[in-house]
Image 1 (cartoon, rainbow, N blue to C red):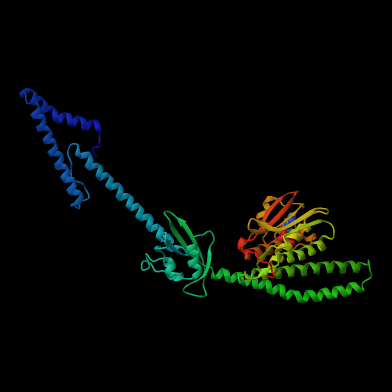
Image 2: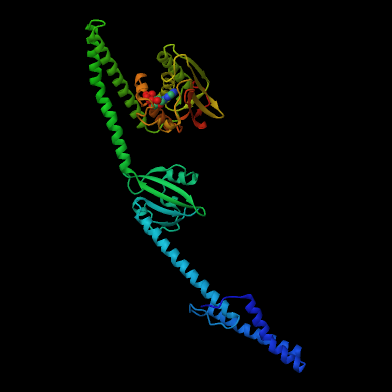
Amino acid sequence: MFEEYSRSRLLIRLLLWFLPFVIVGMTLDLLPWMLLAATWALLLWHYRHLLRLANWLWRERSLTPPHGSGSWEPIFNGIYRLQGKNRRRRAHLARMLTRFREGAEALPDATLVLGSEGQIQWSNNLAEHLLGVRWPKDGGNRIHNLVRHPRFVRYWHKRDFSESLELVSPLNDDRILEIRIMAYGDSQHLLIARDITRVRQLEEMRRDFVANVSHELKTPLTVLQGYVEIMQMTAEPDSMMAKQYAAMEEQSQRMKSLVDRLLVLSRIESATDIDFEHKADMPAILQRVEQEALELSNGRHQLQFVVDSQLQVFGDEMQLHSACANLVQNAVRYSDDGATITVHWQLEGDRPCFSVSDGGEGIAPEHLPRLTERFYRVDRARSRDTGGSGLGLAIVKHALSHHNSQLQIHSDLGVGSRFWFELPAVMHAKQSLQA
Ligand code: ADP
């Protein structure tokens, strides 16, 4: 057991050291000389221990400190204890580091630890296969000097890592990578690159499949509709057959509208990047939307369109028309007769903003996050009665995401809803279309 440091023990030792010198000094009447001799002796003794300590710290390789006596014993013991503690902590950290590295190696993604300026501090094996970064050979190099794709370089310099980046692998053009960067610790970054080629292929296959099936259904449906119409014309009015033909006609019409919407959705989904040089004449689009809404409402609602006739944007006309038309048609379809529906198209600050407010039935909060999912309907029967397909808001979502925008919804059950979206300020086309 180590002797521990104790202040009282140190004081007693000091007193005991001086005591014999004081007694002898008083008996021989040489007290000052004896005290001086005692202090010198003490100083020499301390100096000797100090030298042993310095020698051990700087020269000796042994792990155990020299054996100390008296007041130096707790000091040497304290150093020994501290050393042991540090050794155990280092071993613990080394074990943790090994575990972290083994874990990072087992990840199915390329993982890199980057410094504040993008210097590679560590990377796993997969980083070599997906990004061509070799560890430890590339250690210290900046990531944007190794992955030189202009989009990656822009992404790194922008320092906004809230969204991931999709990139073709620098080693293989057929591979698509999803890159995520997370800031952590003392201005360090963790870069994760995942191979999403298969996911993208499956998505493409699904999109193609839906588009092909919808397309293939169109022709037989049109033929069937033609025959039903002919049969309707030959049937006796108000007869049983006439009613059955009317039901057939209604159902085939529903199917046709579903197929049409599926085609619109897959066309918008698979649309390539929007040409942001092209101006979309929003006031003209909204005139068409108003006309379609008036036909759908058939005088049952009060429609108010407040449109800034000078407000033009860059974007895709077909997609913007689909987004606005679906929102306005929903407002008509889910509002009771006599309700007022207000549509606004104007600047909010420097951002063009479109909004539709209705005094309809409203939507309970638990449904709001799922509304833009395909075929998600709050009330299936009501949606069917109003001619809904469950695809309208999914179309809106995709059309808006191509324009770097998002659908916002505020709704109070029984009071009404407001659907709106803002386009980025850079999409505001300030000159008139004729210019
Ligand atoms: P649908 O074709 O069924 O209308 P949407 O994708 O357009 O499909 O809308 C999804 C669901 O959102 C609808 O079924 C409806 O329940 C709800 N919804 C959409 N717009 C409104 C609205 N203005 N007022 C109330 N509910 C709405």
